[in-house]
Image (cartoon, rainbow, N blue to C red; front, side, top):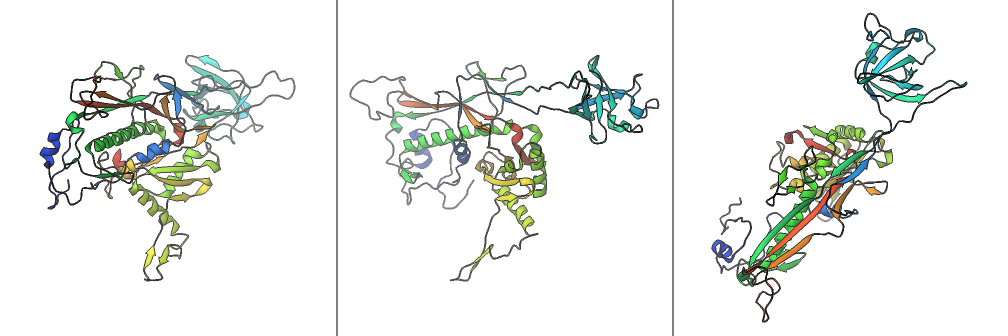
Amino acid sequence: MIVNLLQKYEPKDWTGLTTENHLGTLFGLEPILISPLIEDIYRVNYGEDFLSFLDKFPTEYIDDDRPYEWLLQGADERNIALVSAEDSAANLAGSALFPQPGLGFTRFFMRFSEKYFVATDVIVGNKPDLYKLRVVSDPVADGTEYLYEVELLTGDPVLFVAPSDLAANTRWSKDYSQVEQTLSRRGGDVSHTSPFRMQNVLSMIRKQYVVPGNMILKGKNSPVAFAWKVDGKVQTTWLNKLDFDFNSQFRREIVRLLFYGTSNRKSDGTYANKGDSGYEIRSGAGLREQIAPANLFYYNSFNLDWLTEIAMGLSVGKLPEDQRRFVLGTGEYGMFQFHQAAEDKSSNYTPNFSNDRIQVDKRTGKMSYIGQFLEYKTVNGITFELMHVKEYDNPVRNKLQHPSGGLAESRRYTIMDFGTANGESNVSKIALKGQGEILRYIPGLRDPFTPGGQKQAAIAASAVDGYEVHKAYIGGLRVKNPMRMAEIVPSILV
């Protein structure tokens, strides 16, 4: 709350119907104003940039509001966890009766929980260049597990597999299928991996307001004559202010739905919440909830080397070096923190007080130290670029303060990959075909188009002297590949 001796009124908050009584009681009907122009305490238009940013990418349309799905293909090869290794008498590897598996070209058995390898496959474990094991026959079912008979692919009679490399949960994968050069009878099988089936659902939000008939013509007295600027134009009527607030708040709610929305879908496919009508409320996951849980990282102290390690994990074996550009969405304190980290790095290579960082006004002789790091290029083609997410600096939604100053949320980094794959954007809005925002008004004795009444009778949908305005939005968001996004979060937000 702002307290000032020159302040005449305390700000009042209310939701819903705005009547003449609100304005007269709170402010008086005839105050004399030195300046009628409203000065916003918070000038930042939170969230506007994110929706505008999404609008740059194509919207995908679906025919109805059923759950929408998409497919995500994983790698066509896997590594499989070993259950155990044993000899023909079921003695475990490393035991006194089976100390040296594979010694002298002897065969032994490996137990896996699934049927993945076949005869002729050469499989490798944690030391793929030291031990290569050839599967000599197709696996045999043993309860819920499978036994594979194997032998070392080697010409060294004293080589054996260290029992520690055959321990439970060690990972094994296929290198290739190797056969004899003469009269071979079969080769290895093709392995198949079905795609992931991802699912989300459209959400619906709705907002409304009521205008009493006697408020339609107001505008000559304060505070309905307070002025404010929209796109550089001064507006003065209360009705325009009401409409402006309605639309700007509605847009803000769309942004938060797409960014922060969370799913309420239960494991059985139904939805946990119901509205006043008795029907279910279907809530879809927004951008933040669709980021892969494995790509969520927490930190106490921020540094670029650690950030680079995260980027390496997200890109090595997944992205070519010329596509490793990460956009970090963050608040202003996050931008400052990034700048400090980059400046500390650059001090090791380039003097901070070089001529390109200091400007001198030739007329006054005043010196200016300039520059803010908004991009950092590091090893293996990895580049970080900052994007300001204004919603992270919103003190209304984000309450928790950071011990180092500012909002804790302002130091969150959301890695947003808005690139394309196979011609499709990784992040896109989903909407119903032919269905935009829904805007309706219910006319009563008076409406916005006939504020003073009219000579001929008109149809009214309500006997109330006034009218209602209703607006609704149905939409959702799709993150096609959640592994291409990540979040780096201050530990205080856990």
